[in-house]
Amino acid sequence: MKPVKKSTNQMSLFFSFEDTLSHSHPLFILAKKVNWKLFEESFEPLYCSNNGRPAKPIRLMVGLIILKHIRNISDESVVEQWSENIYYQYFCGENSFVAGAPCEASELVHFRKRIGESGIELILKESIRINGDDSNDRNVNIDTTVQEKNITFPTDAKLHKKIIKKCQIISETEGLPVRQSYTRTLKKLATDQRFRNHPKNKAKAKKADKKIKTIAGRLVREIERHLSPSSRYQTEIELYKRVLSQTRTSKEKIYSLHEPEVCCISKGKEHKKYEFGNKASFVKTDSGVIVGALGFRNEYDGHTLDLVIDQVVRMVGASPKVAKVDRGYRGRNKVGETEILIPGPPKKKMTCSSRKKISSAHKKRAGIEPVIGHLKQDHRLGRNFYKGIKGDNINIMLAAAAFNFKRMMNKWSSSFWHFLEIKVRTRIDCLKIYRIMNYGKLAF
Image (cartoon, rainbow, N blue to C red; front, top):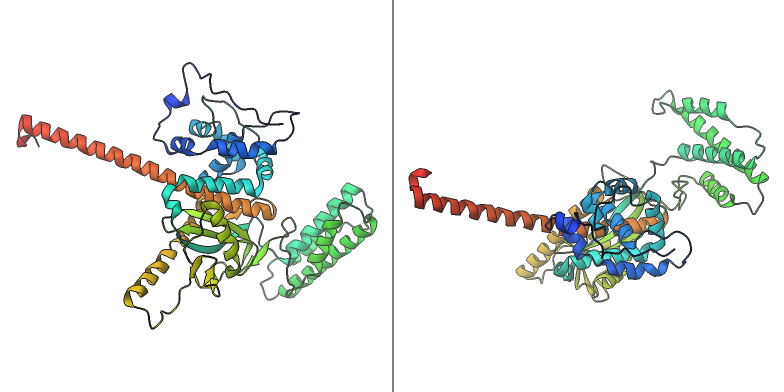
């Protein structure tokens, strides 16, 4: 059912957030700056039915999603903290204190699915608008990173064990006659797989791995024989077959059963040779605003530029003049109206001043690296807990939007403290003058 709009006419008689909260608090200022009507008008058509229980207010749900990524907390934590934090409640549209949770944590999952990638892109666009003139900078820096998925480090033995467990669950739920459960056998094989790096245990561990793969294949074939061709488990069975048939040199390997779209990406990092997730591309202006954030599988960096610049045009309304990139984008010198600057040895005909300009431009490009670090550390880009390819793109855009919101919040808080410092200094100066006039220099 469509969400019911809250009445703001009747305020609390003794207590209201407008009168009691600090008007210089960054969250208070952000609540005033965000155009909440834009979200309500855009997302209201997604609620078609007039039957059933009324949905939660759109401002509440959008506010909770923004707060989650600004504060780097989970769905459960943001719902729990909302009932304790009056600034969170004001940000989400409340006028007076509300005791209790605003909604179930799972409702945030349903809301993200409802608005989809286009709705999240609207939140990113609003975060860019709030940054004002800084977002209109036509010089941008582009770079890619890996957004890791919430999976364990994949090995063949792990995947085969998971297949066996899944097959056992299917046989129990459907009541299929399986000849053997292999419980005792698997327990013995698990002990054989321990300490595999010791020279005496290598052969035994390899033999145990092979045996577990054989058992997994047996169970898959046996369950497939008992199931009908139109069974709801057919897609899972096909996935298990792909995992069992893949070898070391196979293309498009499966690294996780619950997230089969995960890619293995190598960025040449010494501390982390392989990362399992997807590629994320970010566009940052020289002034420090993220104006583009897109997710990809494992494409070559140069092939991502067209889609990335198209998104920047959607977000800002104009294509950038110059985009500075690293050498991973080799092969692209221009995309539409945008000139692509790739570092390399200077040409002989170049003047000294033009060389300095290009050198300083590439030095500025390095500023995107710490921004990506902040996205991973502070705004939930480091590990993605959302499901599927849509979840990958949603997490990337929400992390970028949270960074932009946080950037302005930091500006407002620093300007407030600077204003206080000036006030304190002027007060001290006035006191000094007063003492000199009345008591002379000896007073100090």
